[in-house]
Length: 193
Image (tube, rainbow, N blue to C red; front, side, top):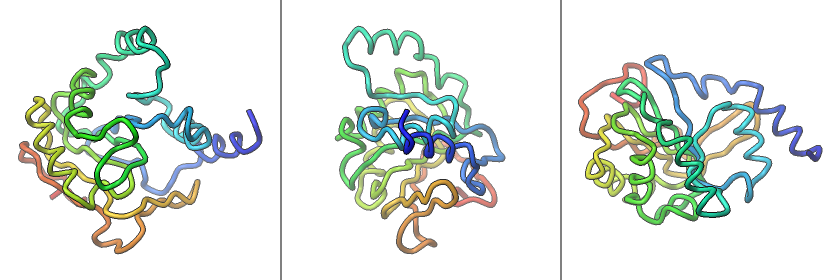
């Protein structure tokens, strides 16, 4: 492991202030981008910060993909309407990572991993809240049989000044677009009310 990777790995052990607190339940982390291959320092940081993650992409062969699915198909099975699922990727207004050009593909993959009901789906991906991707994702998730109370994504670029500060560039009061889902639920003290 080179020196830069060691720095990122060590930085992941230093908690960001309130960055992964969720007083209502648990947070499950999903990677929808091949950080391991394309951004190894970011992968080291995420892996050391979140010990347990579901990686939707990154397998080299179909047999490796099938083996990963077999070992992880139940990963999101115990998520409830009090929990939050954070989906990390690099993105644009119109696609999530390099694999998910449509929200239907992502909804199908999450359904395969047993996601049925969740309180909040939060995208940790630049610009995904700027266009109409979240509205399309809302429709796709509900049609796939995934019920949720809220879905959110940043309107601008997410800035990680590792390990101390994470923020969305631009107007901090309107940093995230929030879309209501089909579960009626409130999370007092958050943007999800």
